[in-house]
Length: 253
Picture 1 (tube, one colour):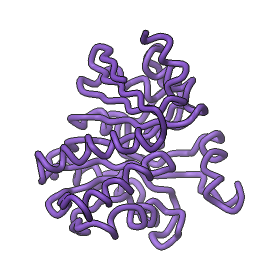
Picture 2: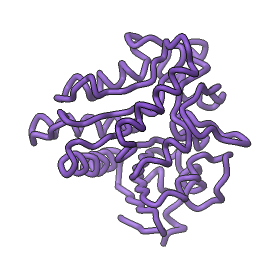
Picture 3: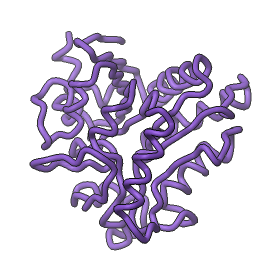
Picture 4: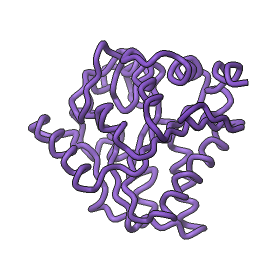
């Protein structure tokens, strides 16, 4: 199902696999039409299916990544590249090592940066020098965060160091041996950086995202739900599975 809600396009797919295929189709279309695109990438559990489908497209349908430039939304801090829980490791494992991307055009915040402010400043500069992000993939946390922009009374505009919310630490603990191992900080693009992308595509799956998806799309625009700011962007696509859309769908019909 597809719904148009002002500037928002909302695709509701039957399950996670179909949601992942739709996301991969949209991203692959961008790559085929504009091979030199600057793509913003997300991590976490939700995009894994999309990355698997993109790898399949590369191997079976000649999807070419060679001219792309990529910028990831975030990275834990402190964490080394070779840590299996780092987002650098995640991207290599799920996408980069399986396609013909130029690793010199891959950008992920340095989770071991000695000067955090300088790292954040340089990250913003690299995005600007690349001409800005053409299409940004987003996930959403159960608390409404995008990137690692956590609910607050105010939001940071640019790439910055974040103190992670307890709900985020709890949600991410499934990837670690214990809660204590989860980093308490991260480097993240800010909301203005995200909103500066020409196109935004947000993926969500599972019942635990249903309430926050409803609030992000139909609720008020508030820093308490950072994803609600996407309502202000001129070109946003939400791709949801049926469970994530379960509270939203009755309001759309």
